[in-house]
Image (tube, rainbow, N blue to C red; front, side):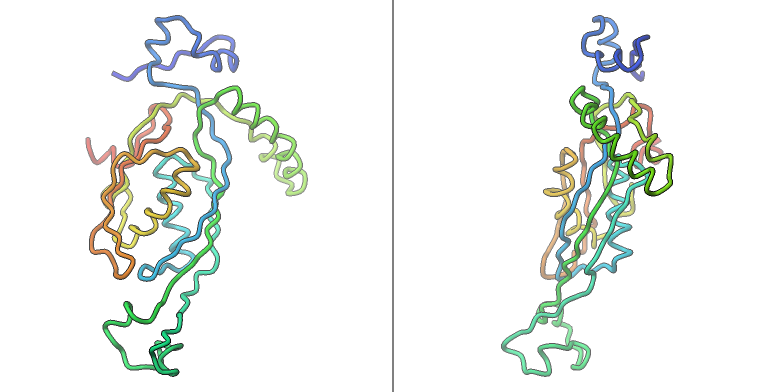
Length: 243
C-alpha cells in the first residue's frame, strides 16, 4: 500500500513544516519528504585507452544514465575534445610512432600504440533535492538571474521557472543492460562518473558490478544499483519489466 503525502492547507509553508505535523500525519508520510528540482552544473574528464566515443555517443550515454537516476528531461550535456590522441612509443621506429594508419595491422596495436581519448564533459541538469528552507532560499536568490536570462533570450518561461514542490522518497534504481541498455563500453564511463557526477548529486552507490580493464575492452555489461531521491508514484527504470 502506497503511503500518502500529507499536505497542509497553508500551501508552501505547510510543506516546509512537514516535520512538525501531527504524529498521525507524520506516520502516514513516513520516508517521504518535500522535494524540488535544483539546477546543478557538473564537469568531468572522460579518459579511456580502449573505449572511445564520438561526441554524440558520449553525450547520449551520459544523458541516459542521468535521466535514469532522476534528472529532469531538459538536461544539457556538452562534450568537446573527442579526438583520439596517439602518443609516441620511443621504442618504435619513426614511421610507426605517429600514424597507426600507415603501418601493417597488428592485433596487439590497442595495447601498444598509446591511443587515448580525453574528452571534457559539462552537464547542466535539474535534479531532485530535499526542499529545505536553505535550499529554497538559495533557489530564490537565483530568481534575478533567471529574469535577466529571460530578458536577454526573450524566453518568458525562464523567469517563471520557480520551484515546484513535490513528494519524494529515497529509491533504489538499477542501471543495467535490461533497464537502460548499458553495454560493456559503459563500464569506464560509470566508473569515472561515480566520484564526480554521482557524488555532486548525492547519489549513493549501493552495489556495483564493474569489470573495467584500462588495457582492453570489457566483455561484461556493468550493473550498478544506486539510491536517489525519486518522485512518489513515478516508475523507476525497469519497473514495468518487473510486473
